[in-house]
Length: 225
Image 1 (cartoon, one colour):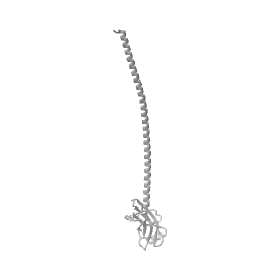
Image 2 (tube, rainbow, N blue to C red):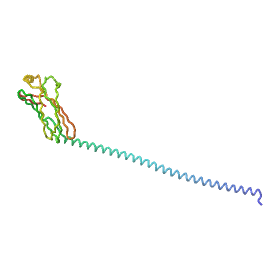
Image 3 (tube, rainbow, N blue to C red):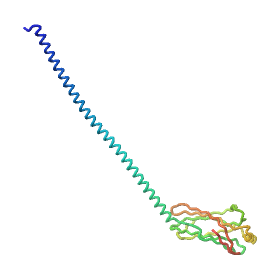
């Protein structure tokens, strides 16, 4: 039989061996954890590098996309401005241009003087045209147009290179005293004329003419526009 002391010694050796085995396992576990932590740090560093590279790539993509968008916007604006300029240039070249071509007035005896005004379209396309005018005889020092109404004519078409004639009568009959006042420089004849027209692009153009009527002889009046 094993004595009590021998049994205790055997138990103590078994416990010491078990403790040694446990300590060895703990050491191996700690070493494995340390190795795992090292690789996790390496993997984390690689992931951080990849993330930073991806962020930088995204930033570069955003900057490049914005630059491309700005360039495209500037190109589109330049193309739009060039197109607008081309359209405006074409419209200026093709539109109608209506102006007073000639004006004169004849006086026969005691009849009312009548101014004949010729409008000409010097453009390359037709125009829808109308005009309104009145011939007034009033004192030289009167600078404001007297209260004389004159209605506009209906619209008519003037073709490219075409003419339209308008006849404007004095608002009252001319007398010998009127003529004497004109010769003495006390009164004058004034032509008040307004006209407007629409070109083929439906743009409106308007102008007013204020002209002195000059008598060159007892029976012939010319308008100085």
